Length: 497
Image (cartoon, rainbow, N blue to C red; front, side, top):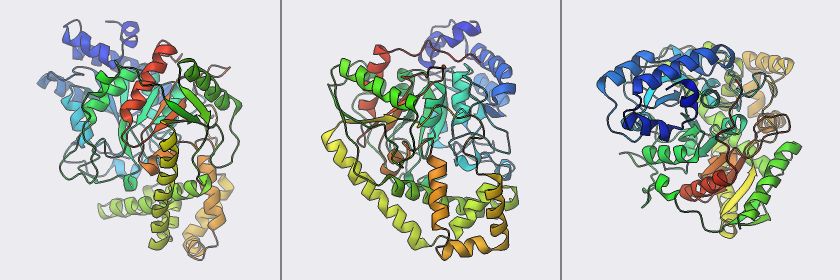
């Protein structure tokens, strides 16, 4: 098999080739490594190569799993591989102790026969919708290397779009699967809360907002991966039962005709690019042509309040992560300045403030639930604009310098506790979500959401649209996605680099 043939196959098809004896897992790994060597200098999708581990896995035999022999990359955030450090995009953690056991999701991927040969790049602690860690350098978009591939699973998306692998693992705490999928012309599903175990290293990641999953080029790969990954593990606090029919088998049946709500306005009141609106309008027309009922509607909630509640995830989680790192012998000074700034704001946030914001998640879930009582699916843009150029949305250096000066002097925490930085915090929430305001709702409500590559801009950039459904309705989203994939195929559209 040559690279051109390799790229014409999704993971499902490659596994069939291996099962038929027409290609070996070792040959596929060689193709993936060769392609990675070609694109790594320009795109930087991988931050840690694990060729030795992959060769050892192949030598032991990959078994009869449904994806046996297919090469795979995992994300260097939360996806622990025993004996290999999980850096979370940080210098401070890259030198930390390696996990003693695989994350359940990683073990299930290995049990399916996937050959893991590296970890993908991500922003520090997965905190951004772009991938630009100081520890490993930024990743670039294969459709235009001057632009971001999104984040935080940006390295995974760049690797898939560049043809290194047909799919890659990721996770999504605020859009981190769907945002890069939308930026890179790929399929990205955030599963329902409790669908996939995030253990054993954690009971819930980001208070339950974060889900494991994959980024792929085909709906059937995403469905098969969900079958592989789904199911409870001992000790899981939230666990959905397995469906009666496998997700991949359910794709054979089209969804019933659905009632679909749509909205293209930013929930935080910021501008939405004309191309993002056009992406939704064209999708509405496509859905109507397929016989679905599509109407403008949106959940009755305060989007700016939701953005603030989302930012408080960081205020709760980042200080805890830094404290754990220091307890294990790391140095807080090794974290990026913005991360240390968020940690200071978090330490100055009272337990009552944090709890108040967490309790508001129920308000958002009830509002979205009321919408889903009337509509099966909610359609929005995935992004408010096409993939942004590198550096867009960065905190202005002068502002960052002032805030870090206040942090170093101890005044930042004091001002935060006195409520004198409330406007700054609200602006931080707006600034961080201006280009990606549509994805956090699914994380705070635990609902499934998928980004599909149904639109390319006039200058050839991918720009996905997002579908959200009620809790547990992952299968419905995948059935709809398969119908749209058949009606408007995207698999043959490949990035130039």
